[in-house]
Length: 431
Image 1: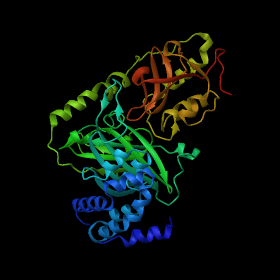
Image 2: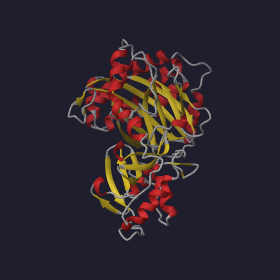
Image 3: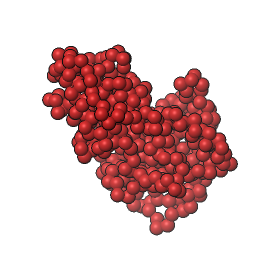
Image 4: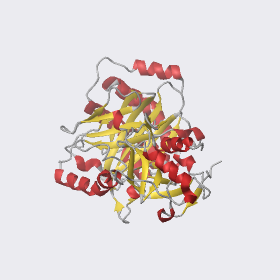
């Protein structure tokens, strides 16, 4: 896309006054409905050409937007693929049609923070919206789901790496619905059966996310946050425990976009919403039982002599408990994330590791289960990517958002892999 044309359109579509948000919704939904009838949708999706056709037809929507909608909404409708396009891109025909229906909200709101520009394109909640139903751990199919699409790009116009490029692996974004009245550090997409798919097109990353239906929270304030990292960033947002309101931390220097989600007109059912949140309790409120675990003030790491170096590493790591968490950092005193923590601990013992939990899995020797683990072993988790150091007695020390460097039960989340970084001779198994 021509950068000068891009900026010229942004400026041209910048009236002094902004139209009513709900008028924008009606106009854009109407434009989408006129642009495609059902047969057109089927034909175009079979050719995987929805995004091309909608771009060609977008002039009518832009014309209406210039006359009747805000500048940001009009600009977004011109520049980005639509939520329906993204659903079609992942070959979910049913969801693509749903995003074109009156049930969906076309939002197209853009926010610029840190190095990024983020646009919330659309959101929809309801029953059986996708061709790919989400299965729960108990084997039950989740029929009621929420789907949203956000576009993330560099504010300076640099292209975001394609998902096929190695550099894409260095990008980490946390995108999640948040519910007013519930601490977002404890209640977010990680606990709401969430997952996502990333797509890159024309240097823009599009994230299609899904989670349990937030439509049950009619009557609540509802938000969608976008920040860097794989966890919710407590420093990026402010949660008012008295009012339940969630807001951006204006002092935060990085990406901390926060969108207020529209109400869908449904009647509030506060009892049902509270029951749902209570059901998340054992998983979401794990800090009470598993993440606030303490081995006692006089805890000492004990291991056979064959594993003395691993035990020494575990003992060394323990002295930093209570120090802060900081995503992307590796300071044991000023702030670190989980892989930065393990990297710096090993660095003290002359072992060089990458600042990446996925790549750290490539080092050492695989251990079959927790019963065979010894102090100093690395414990890896997948939801999201995380690494901790085993200290014995079923416990680990690690860097956690909200808590900083802390001691937890090793089973605070499902263990995906265990690696022994120090071999039986007491030396490092990492060259």
